[in-house]
Length: 450
Image (cartoon, rainbow, N blue to C red):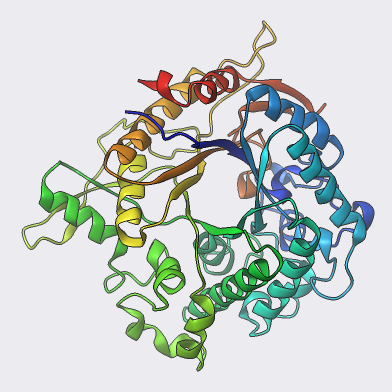
């Protein structure tokens, strides 16, 4: 059990969740600004107006990243901070912020991994139809051009989207995330197709400005774990992850990744083709762009066995099964089998672009933050990720979610995922025990996990 030489140890965050400064220096509003200010949409009426005030405290935060020993930091760009209306006028102050942040990271030997979209669509574009608008991919391509023209001389690693299934299904179907819509059933496939087109056009723009770029996406989706080591259960768990002929919910990872990787939708597209734009088959050549790595956000999975007919059967959890503070199941084996099945399918290096847990953390009487559950959780998951490497998976890196406690979307500030504790009243940062533990893991390249 080990991790390869050059394995990237990092942590991650997202613009709306940490930056604050929602109306500073010409930033436009995003759908999350509007949504979080609507009564009853976010726990306790909390917003990202201030969040972690990272916009004003980025140097302090980068210094903490260096103290932990991070080799990389995955950040996202606020589209409306760069282009307040989503298109047209460019806000130079917004670009200047990211320019300074990138320089600060590099000065501290931390490589930036930049995500272009982490759910905060400019509100002005939402008012023009957002992702339902056929022009949305041109808007996104132009935004990409502005960002990479400024940062591409120093940033090599790019992700176009974070978890497109989540912002589609929770933002536009269930309505529990921004923008809070509940669209007609078929329209979710149109959104998905436009997002995929946006990925393709954005990838072309990145290649044009950053010839040595490495491009990926931070995906997520249904994760299957074989209930036993039998070949039948392994096959069932794999089918559970990828069989779109049985599941058209858009939660399957390959509804998004097959068009990107193979230039074709998975089997099952015939059931939803009527909802796609008339040009969808021609569009696949734009969506299918060269891809360098597969980013996977993963927190838990489902145990699956083969039924009598060989079809996947999801196994229930026993009473009292371990859960995080978010009530997500603790299933370390997902970091072995999820990457393994994805690598078998796509043959690209796997980066875990998010993994972690929400925990009940507070500053103790001794002034420290003791979070043994996070240490135990992360050790268990990383041990399983190492086993994926032993299985032959090309492992590129691991980004802990999150670098610091932040605004956790509809959950507000109550879900603490950070390696760094944030007192949201004072903005005081305190490294948790897990941060010092992770520093030792990084120094040992994971060899101390076993």
